[in-house]
Amino acid sequence: MTIEAKYGVPVVAMHTDKFDRVAASVARVNGMPGLRQVFVPQPIMGKTAAQLRAYVDGTDPITGRPVMQEVVEGLTRPIANAEGVEYDRSTPRLVPADTAENLEQLFLESHWTDGLPVVLPTEARVEAMLAATKRKRDEVVGRMRSTHFREYWEYTVEKVAVNAVMAGARPAYFPVILALAATGVTARSSSSSAMAAMAVVNGPVRAEIGMNAGIGAMGPYNHANATIGRAYGLLSQNGQGGSIPGLSYMGNQGNSYAYNSLTFAENEERSPWTPFHTEHGLRAGDSAVSVFSGVRSTAFTLGLPAKHWREHVGHMLRGMDPHGPPTLLLDPIAARQFVDRGGFTTKDALADWLYDTARMRASEYWDYQLIQNYIYPRATFGEEPWAGKLKAAPDERVPMFKRDDIHVVVVGGESNGYWRIMGCNYQKTVAVDEWR
Amino acid sequence: MTDTLTVLNPMGYPPKVTPKPLAPRLSTLDGKTIYLVDCRFDDSDVFLGQMQAWFREHMPAVTTVMKRISSVYLQDDPTTWEEIKARAHAAIIGVGH
Image 1: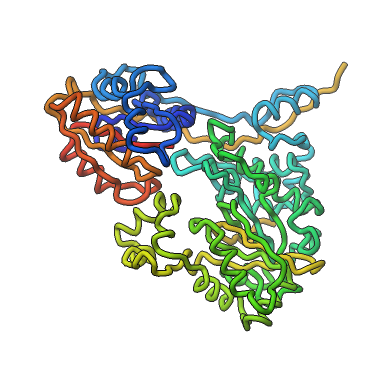
Image 2: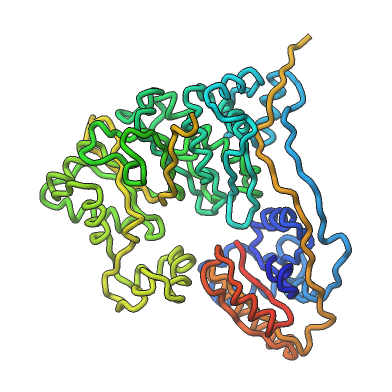
């Protein structure tokens, strides 16, 4: 679209057929509904040259017309007057009054929910939520979009309150939910990789609102953990303008972590290390939320056996996709074992060791599809630390991750020393106290 | 009579859509240069290579140039767009997924 609009060069955009609704929608909301787009079958990945030549010689699965005829016509067919349009979109504050049963059905059919029943956001319930913050209802909290290609939508304090009510959250949780909204990091990425988000809460607010950092912290056993995370997800999908499969959500398998965006409190009291938020500019006495995106891959084990713990951890790290850096989620028992076995008296010391341990042969590293898609292009243009890896011999063992992308969080109730690695990307930490 | 409720709409506020013009189309591709722009996702380069072969076989009067974007598709690439504007009459970009 940039080449067309800014540089004045006629373009045909090629897509795979699974993305026809997405491509049409993105063109429309970018003011270019007449963008010439041609489709070929999905997938492109892994097909031979001969198979892809058959795509070129074949027909567009959306229109049924020959692909190359559409390409040539896309560059030569004159433009109709109506191919660029301007229009206003608005979001009415209220939904037309109806029965509770009909409204619940409307919310479901409008894709405003996560498929589960919601608490209907009546004016009284929303007012009660708004009373939990000094911020004005019409103040813009942030903006989100589901992917790089889509436009940002914005949301106010009142919109966040509406979604918090729907999630079943109590007003006492509202400052935490507002802080999550203020990150501007969507919990409803449209990525075909089926991302979820993760939210870690630190500081005094954990105890104030009864969050769980112990047994079952990451499961469906605590009202605050469950509904804060659900509110973050609902706010994301509605605040950004939707998360509809095939249109604005393309996660191929989906991700059950998205039901509550894996929201929990760090077990600061039983951790041998400093709280997570203090590593990101806040004081221990501050309350904060930290968000991670791209939550997809996991590895898990029990404790750190004395003889081969280094090898076990190394195997776990190499089991992750190198495009999803590791955040260790350690039960306090496992955290103390890392101190005892490895002498890691700080999270940084542990992360340094993880960085050095997570290595694989350069030829294998560069062969990962996500590394080819997202890292190799940057490496070829000299961006470090990846450019240096291009110089490695095929059998040289290169680091899988950037050191700064490796994190450690302590969570769990010491019913055993199980722990896991979550493949995800830390995004940012926001103070909760500013949203009280 | 069944009780009714008034509830609030949970959707955020979208930006206004403003039109962006399409570039004028070409009267013919003969004698023209078309850039085949590889967005570097999955095996797009292999696909565009096959499209380039198709042009050689079916429209030999068209000059095609394979061009990879400078980085990942998530980043704007004005250097490549400037090159296309300077040297190409049209572009085919792919493959979006």
